[in-house]
Length: 141
Image 1 (cartoon, helix red, strand yellow):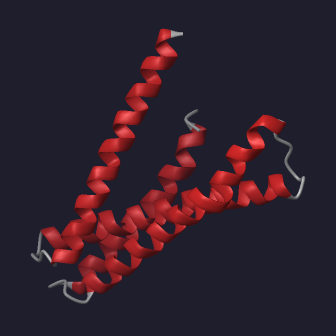
Image 2 (tube, helix red, strand yellow):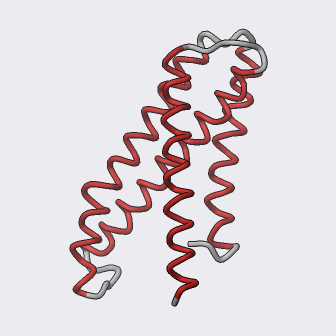
């Protein structure tokens, strides 16, 4: 039992740190930090975050709609939680992903080497999808 509680606390801390990192990334994009070395890293991180957030939210919404239509059956006591994810958290994650992608796209217009920045962004976005696909394969769901 203690292992499960410890694992949950570690997960909460990692999630919190990722949220702080995402906030700092958004602030950095908004402030327009430029440079040949920094800009591709920002593009990589921003597109990665955008794709991952949008994908994560989409999964919440799609799974919720499958539950709502009866295609997937959930225990009755989990239905209210499923609705929160379907109608609140999922759309917020999707919106956050779109906003990160828009911020990255706007920032790309100011990158000294746009081609390199675009490549870094593409690698970040594709990498985020790969990470998302690898997690269930690794047993992390």
